[in-house]
Image (cartoon, rainbow, N blue to C red; front, side, top):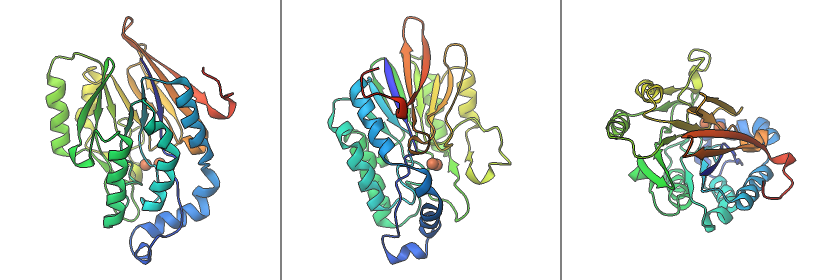
Length: 275
Ligand SMILES: [Fe+2]
Ligand SMILES: [Fe+2]
């Protein structure tokens, strides 16, 4: 069973209404104008879509931060690029990132809700999360950890009810490997250094991962990709930013060996043919 995992394309743009100068969006617009637009190339997202359509995995997973400030125009640009994938018969799972949940402005929230419904093929609305989606021989646990936070921080949170939901699921006998899909990494090596960017409330999830009640966590948020797994491929895979690094993750689950294997795909070096 093959999965292609990509993350953090970070489309951006200018302020889309005057209120953007009074809420957090001005921080994101400023950051995009003077930093992000020189670092992120949306053409690499187009290339990722071409790669997925060519290799036809059993599932594609996007772990968020489609946008820089969560404005409707930014969502429109990324959804247009992802449209061929949505229209294909390859199941796509998308969970929003903190930049997709940047502010509480209604039109931004509605655009994010639309992206969740549209990219998940109409199967899941944002309000229905968390949810389990079974594809092939794997259970994908879709957990939203993103929400608007203060001006200077990019915090994520595991709510008490979501934590309980995961505990309840993991108490049941496991019929298939469980893959947690969320924007934030569960592993945090530098909680003080990264205090402005970190997730809170994941302690119990880490225990479930240690017990292999959750086999694999797929995340983004950290823009440099990494794969921290044990010999059977259990642990955490961060796809990094596709538009910054030009890499995506190809993951294979072998049911006979009951193990996951990982390959980092360099889109710049991909020749357009099936791998
Ligand atoms: Fe990001
Ligand atoms: Fe993020």
